[in-house]
Structures are given as structure tokens and as C-alpha cells.
Image (cartoon, rainbow, N blue to C red; front, side, top):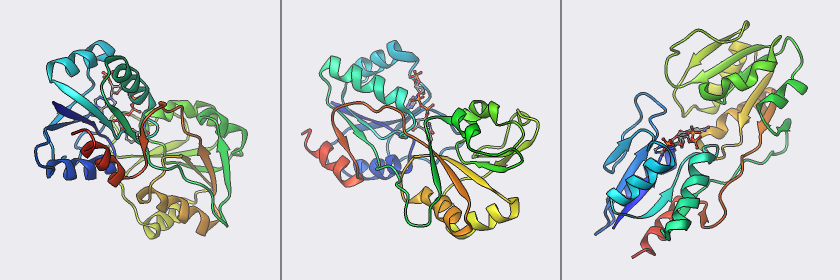
Length: 244
Ligand SMILES: NC(=O)c1ccc[n+]([C@@H]2O[C@H](COP(=O)([O-])OP(=O)(O)OC[C@H]3O[C@@H](n4cnc5c(N)ncnc54)[C@H](OP(=O)(O)O)[C@@H]3O)[C@@H](O)[C@H]2O)c1
């Protein structure tokens, strides 16, 4: 049997590196192809969507997939919900690696948002807003007109900024606290909007916001699958060892 690792996070890369060293394990990784030049993984890797539910089912069968470890991003909930449901139906072991969400600490000034559209209820007109939420969900901020929007993305933009007052900013994580502070100061950021992705690497922007007194709009996580879930790379590897 072959283990399928659904990747797309830094932790998935760490898991792939450890799986590649696991004796007797056959494993393959999968990336959605969301970024143009992703860092390579230590496992054989297929890239691109499976072609919907039917394509995913066919992939599982054709590649003798015997278990799925899902290490996709906490906001990539469609792939997680679908995979968990199909695996349950087929009797395939499935486990989700989900890093713990962030919680505010002393000095943080966070407003919890149910979704992107809710930001407009809190962010005043004229504010400079740094969107650390990525290009793919930028359209969801259409009701934030009257504020200056800066959207950070990994790849250079392929089209003009979709709103009247705003710009794309290209940057590949991770960023240090000092880098984030310097950037936010240079741009005169009043509000930082982030998804509650969790994880130490991307927490630096939240620490920078706290240090500079910048308000944070924290988008809550979407629904996650029920069932097997681990919160650390070590626990994910233990789950794989337990499959034998
Ligand atoms: N959402 C975020 O904020 C975020 C942030 C950082 C990284 N990512 C990564 O970017 C990828 C796409 O995120 P998303 O929010 O668009 O996901 P999504 O909404 O849950 O999934 C959309 C579609 O992308 C394809 N897909 C997602 N992950 C895949 C994988 N690992 N391998 C093959 N196909 C995959 C599937 O296409 P088919 O239906 O054709 O199979 C899926 O139906 C994920 O792998 C995620 O880990 C997402």
C-alpha cells in the first residue's frame, strides 16, 4: 500500500522529509499547484487538483493508496472535508494534521471576524489595511472600499489590483518580526487582516502588530473534518508508524 500525503504547508514538507527516511514505507505527496514554484518535497510529488471528487476516487484506486495523511492548510477545508468523507466511505485510514490556532496574548488588539466581509464593519474609512490573507480570497474584501488595501502574495501579480485604492506586494514567507515591523512602519499600516492559520513561522506578523499597536482582524477557521486529528509533526509520524 502507498500512503498519500496531502501537502501545501511547511509542516507537510517536514513530514515528507521524515517519511522519506521511514524504512519500508511507500509514500507519495500531492500539491494543489497553488504557487508557481513551490519548494520541493522529499517524496515523489504529483501537482495539481485531482479533478474533483471523481478524479480523487480514481487516483486512490489507480495508485493503490492505502491511507491518507492530510497536512493541508487549516483554511483549505474543502479538500480536507472531502478527503475525510471519501476515506471514511472507503474504509481508508485518514488523519488530519492541524496545527493549533492562534490565541491573543497580553498587548494584542484583535477583533475576531467570522469571514472576510465582516472586516468592513470594524475597519474605518481611510485606514491602511495589510491583507496577509493571500491573493485567492482578495475578492472577498470588495466591501472594504474607501480603505487602502495592500495584499501580500507569493507570486508576482498577473493582473492589476482589482480595487481602486490598493496594491499587491510580493513576498515569500517566512518573515522575521523585525522584517514585518519595518514593512508595516514603511507602509503606515493601521489594520492587519489575517486568517487564523496558526503556527510559529507566520506568527511574526502578529508579534510585529502587537509591538507597533496595530489592530488585527482575525478571521476564524472554517469547519474541519471530524475524526482523527493530530497537532504536531511528531504525532503525525506516529500515526503513520501505527499503520503498519
Ligand atoms: N487556503 C489557504 O489559506 C492556504 C494557505 C496556504 C497554503 N494553502 C494550500 O494551498 C492548497 C489549495 O488551498 P485551497 O484553500 O484552495 O484548498 P481547498 O479550497 O480546500 O481545495 C480546492 C481544490 O484544490 C485542490 N487541492 C487542494 N489541496 C490539494 C492537494 N494537496 N493536492 C491536490 N489537490 C489539492 C482540490 O482540487 P480537485 O477538486 O481538483 O481535487 C480541491 O478541491 C492546499 O493544498 C493548501 O494546503 C492554502
